[in-house]
Image (tube, rainbow, N blue to C red; front, side, top):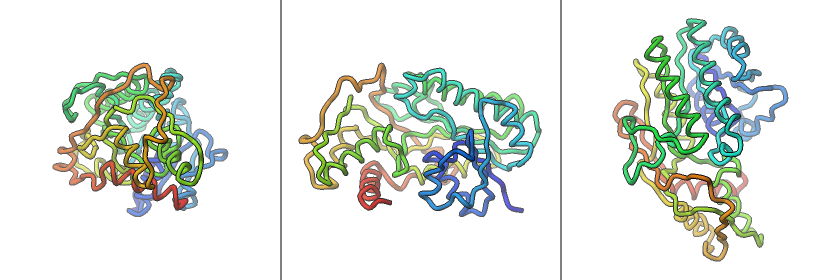
Length: 320
């Protein structure tokens, strides 16, 4: 029988790539949005898969709405990738961030428990939960120390998943994903902001690239690879949480240097450090240890940060 997957947040970067991946595996894919008839689903259109997905209206913060969709469609797997996804924006919208991530996750878990369907549940965790980890790579045993409203919300969702797994025996797991990028990232994310500015300048714009702290270090991976790790987690016999990362970190300055060098420009001629763009708190260093994912899932990242920068630049310049 054809497996059915429900993707909450199907219109985002990860949701779109996951939908594409699951369709290739022969799944019947359902995707949700607060108002499926009004949403543009631009990323699904960009990947050419919108017509292959059954789009449903569902509000994750409304338990009745969640229950109705699950009861009707009876998915085999649920991937919760929804919720406010910007760390920077979470400082301006902390209530919306917590509600969309923590309440949304709780409603899905409670609906699965209530219906007693044998649904496997994946929750999108975040490396932001770890906070400052010194210079050590974080793994599944590293304690959380969230330093943004977004990280607090993701930490809450992580423990909700763990609680429902342990208390009720649900097949529920969290993927603690480190930064992962692609051409589908919106420009409110710093990586796409950099790529867009570099390409505009290359094409003759007199723009400058305005950024805050460029000394931060991140473990940036390639998003299309990371969605396969999500899928593999739900194919295991037992539900466990996994860190998904490349295992290598680069500074934001190195990201910028790489981006400008891809188009033959000197980054120092175009970068402006703007103190207004500094966050109330930020992580100096972030790196993941994905050894468990390699050992148990057979997954490891093929692309590292320099590859990601090059592929994003190429996609932008060719209009892909």
